[in-house]
Image (cartoon, rainbow, N blue to C red; front, side, top):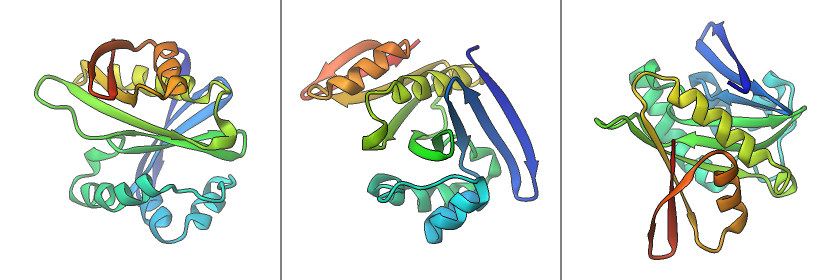
Length: 178
């Protein structure tokens, strides 16, 4: 593995943290989701980081209430949702496991890197760290990610993280790991 895994016991549950070269991924806990939904600045204060101006971005804002509801129903859903990516003391983006594994052990991921952090290897590292962690879980056998044909940076990030082109569909390429 190319990262360290930390598990912290918190009053509101367990925090799963992946620390690697130059960045950290933190699975959003129930309390984190609550803070991000109503007071993102309190989330930043809690974790000692700064938040980019337009973060959480629109897709994460749409997903957070659904993820929070999943956590309220079953805390075992933690980790199968958004993870915050940080470099040093600021948020660089987020990466999301979009659901629990299906009956074949397959999951899909999506990610967003803040514009000022793009083309620095952040996406490749975050994808690689989360993918290695996910594959180490006994119920996950394969991970998929998609990107638009025109998104050369995203295609490069997926390839650098060990993903291979699985198939093409209209304007979307689907990549698979491993």
